[in-house]
Length: 200
Image (cartoon, rainbow, N blue to C red):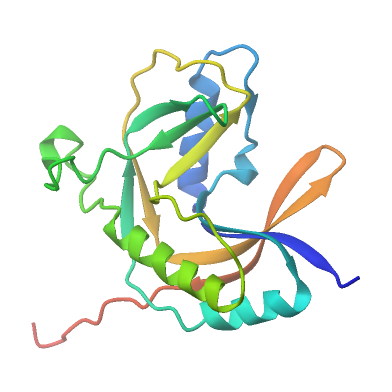
């Protein structure tokens, strides 16, 4: 029986973003919720499931060929998903009519948020997984940050928008430990930075 790992592609927060998310979780008063530890907070891109060592090598090689530009997601809504029973942060951008939400409706300093770049990245990773014989979720992609599991309702709380700057994507392993599950980054791939014309 070959070695296997439970894997997924994700966006991993920087220290400042992780601290902001942790403070938000701590500010929510809700009984019976199982809060995600700060070190496990992330944005899932593509869940791969249980993967053997040979397939893991193939998928990492394929992921290394994917390029993109850094982008920012604005998480500005607290959401409750009843079927999985999770409390999560989601994004209202782009607006339902396809237009960007006016900057002044968010914050003067939180600009450039869009899920289009994330969707393109997910599409590329989904294709890479399929090429390696892996079956992934085919539902439309909704970027979200799971804050708590075993949630039963949506707490009445107004939140400040959180800007998540994505400079890289990573392959993460879900590891079972005595005190629960811990997510461990296996490999990370930085996005290509935009080129700057020195003459401008």
